[in-house]
Image (cartoon, rainbow, N blue to C red; front, side, top):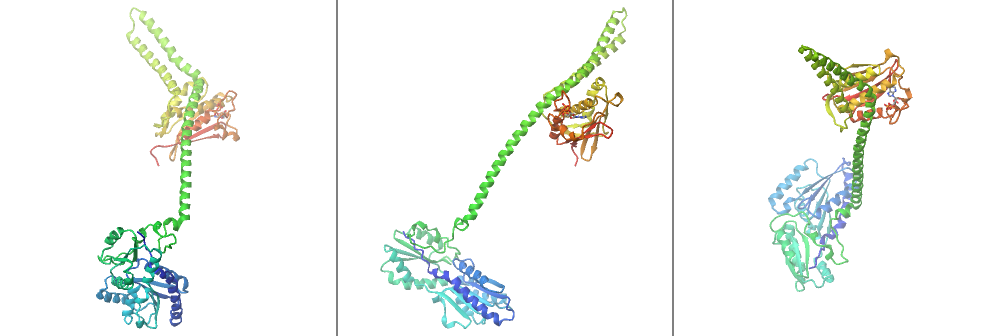
Length: 553
Ligand code: ADP
């Protein structure tokens, strides 16, 4: 089956330009005659609807051309003669009233009539409707103009259809065509053309079979034309209103015919360009942007994963280092721990010997013995507690944040260090706030930070005379954070080293590792806190830690 897509409206293509020229001339004339020459009202009247193809395309072109060519601001109002679909005279009467009401007191300066029904309407009602306003009748076939009825204010830009010539030309290029199916709707205007087509094509009937579909609905027409035999062609003239009385705006049926079935030298008009044809470079750049973005996102995701992995590894390493560091701190504590354990062991021994002596007497004092046994139990618990604390410090535990009270932690750590204070001959002062300081923290790691700071303080007070060997640990609440400070009265930190002390491997000690403060810094960062060092006014250093309080702000 061949498809004939010849459009008799082809010549309308040029009309947009012709019509707009006429409009420009008319506007030029009226400009001299009107007082309010800087504002023009243009009325466009469509025949069956504003969105009917291809008329809507012509109207759009005319409007665009008007805008382009005029010097004045123009106020365009578009209407459609809906009455043209049915041709009911009552509807037309009401429509005239409606248009009059719309323009009461301010008639349009120019009327553009689109299509034959609209032209017929104006020619019928010229006397009632703006008789002095110039009208351009356009987008219509010559046969639809009543030339005898035209007034001096009317301009016609029309085309001429020659169906017989069109069909014969087609048969010239497709001589084996046997059937031509003619699609034309059933509105009054379409019925007129039905008659014209039949009349003009009659001489061809001995050469080809012509099939008419004007008594069918749009859907039935599509169905029937889909099963046409080979060597058939379809002539789609128009389908405004089908036989079922349904109006059709678009040209859906026309363009579902594959282009590959056209003869190679065909030219296609009025085809809606595909999105790709219309916006190829925009689509290409959007796709490019999306691809680049996708690439960037995947790189970022990979980077993010890599960083997460690195963070996990760093934290693991930090935990391992911290563990090693705790061992070295434990080394510092060994002497005092030995001392702390020796004390209860010594008194256990003394108490045991005393009990032994009492038991040897013929009348052992049972009450005394009870007291001794109680003392032995207490001392044993003391020794066991020292060992428990030491073990918990040296435990290789994973980093785990829990709800703790910073004050509790400080008190516990200071107690743990009390024997160190005795052994290393310094005074350990602690001052905690009255109210609890709830934080999210890892008990062992924070304890380790305090231990490191205190041990550093002791080291710094190597040359400090006896009565001044004081380390104070204080807590306070500043706005939404809990603060902890460890101050000593030692050598202090050279001003240019205040920042560097937290760097790994920075040490001023002969046997130092330079890891204590770096680990403290890492631990505090993992707690979303801050650690800083400052020298005190009268000698010594203060390390201050700020941790976010839980359940505030
Ligand atoms: P180390 O104690 O092994 O040197 P740290 O990281 O704990 O490692 O400390 C780094 C350096 O910071 C110390 O060598 C010392 O110079 C300085 N420092 C730390 N704490 C104090 C302090 N309280 N007073 C003076 N200097 C200190």
